[in-house]
Image (cartoon, rainbow, N blue to C red; front, top):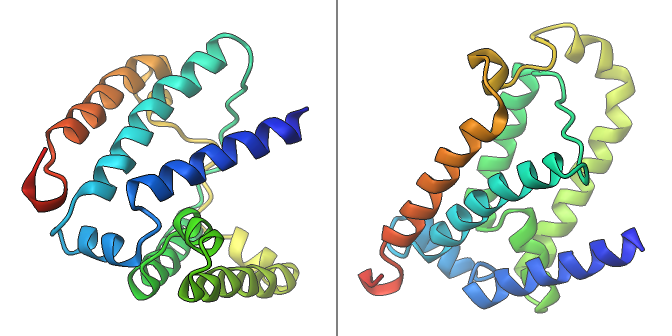
Length: 176
């Protein structure tokens, strides 16, 4: 049942990406160039809804948020790889899969490149694990833990801010 729910939710997410134009290389590139902020509006809406949704699911006992250890070197390296890949291909993992489902060859190249990169890392990790994990680990760190507050009190205003920005940002052609 969980797999079926994952499939349905994944298909719905992919459909929303496709319908919003987020599976379009041109639209993503124009977002990065700040010419068409439609994809940014989609991202901000997803973050805003997700912030509240995850906290509501956690409060209801349907989800359990477990925080991974903060590992700054890994985050910096992964962020750099992600950013370069995003800028070069014009796709992030979710939009690449949505575009590949539409049959776009450049998206398939992005998906295959991501899979090859993950496979290479998986084979290299046992050799690098000791070195990589020996530096910059800080344990499970959260902003709400640092501030000494419950997560919902941080998530609610952030969600409201994201949704407000999504509503206020211009879309294609400078329209709202």
